[in-house]
Length: 358
Ligand code: ATP
Image (cartoon, rainbow, N blue to C red; front, side, top):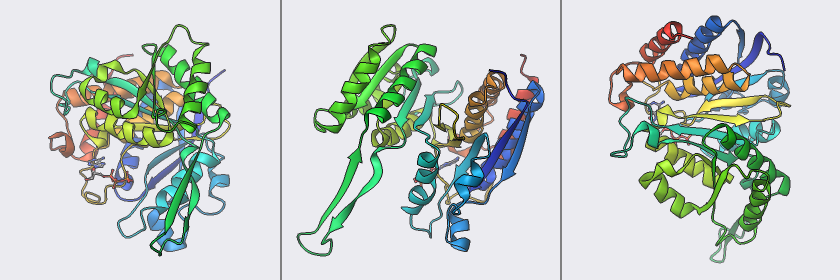
């Protein structure tokens, strides 16, 4: 498939530090585009919690229709302290993920050389994994209800939904990814207690596995996997897991990298029928917003994942190398024990993009 020369990007900074990190991310992406000979055409959208306070919508009724015209979405974070914190997921993130069938949530966790992670004795080669989280069904379908909640015999229910199609496609993606990495897949569930839904999950993942005899496969329960991520992260290459478990494990992945500010994520529609969405793993961090001190690395790295998704592999690799060089030089944000401002870090990454040999 031939590559395009111009890509249309919907930039959605959102709220809080989103307004600071997306613009600097765009600057770094532009420097890579200039170097590798393609163009990025951005249109910015104000969607998010502040927009909700003004209009009553996180995403306007025609939002998905408008965004559908773009190749990809470059997204910061949504949420404000004075807006109900159940709304951003319900009215924005889940709508985009399901509306655009972004069934893969791709979250790499790597210890960058030069970052002191929280795990003593672990080196960069020990922490290099990807959590593939099923992203459109499972525990987060928001199907449920209350029965007499205000009475002593009140009840509440949430129903999880797992489909053969949903499990099969995320498993396929994970095994294919493992083939391009260290050829190891760990399937993380809790199928010893969720004996219907997650036993079905295991069964289907293992059917898919049969076509990948070259990939080493193991199954781990989430309690054990959490302990192993801290004690022996080197055991993991690709983790395939459910929506809820993946939500938690990928934050743990972010934590063992050294800071939530470092982690990137992709909400991916692998078939490219719809735009995929790339964002940092952290939220809008209102406690530090407006001070110019947010760590932009997770957002810039998410931009690199976005370029890779668009087929610009060299440019993506160049950005990741520029991030590594910047961190190694000791240009670190506050959350990593340094004092560099958001823009200073991004400017250094731009310099490193420009000077990296190809
Ligand atoms: P969400 O529910 O949307 O994930 P949250 O409120 O749980 O959001 P964050 O907004 O990610 O969490 O913030 C958690 C903590 O991490 C805050 O103290 C915040 O300041 C810090 N933090 C998050 N992102 C960054 C960043 N990019 N740079 C520096 N600190 C950050």
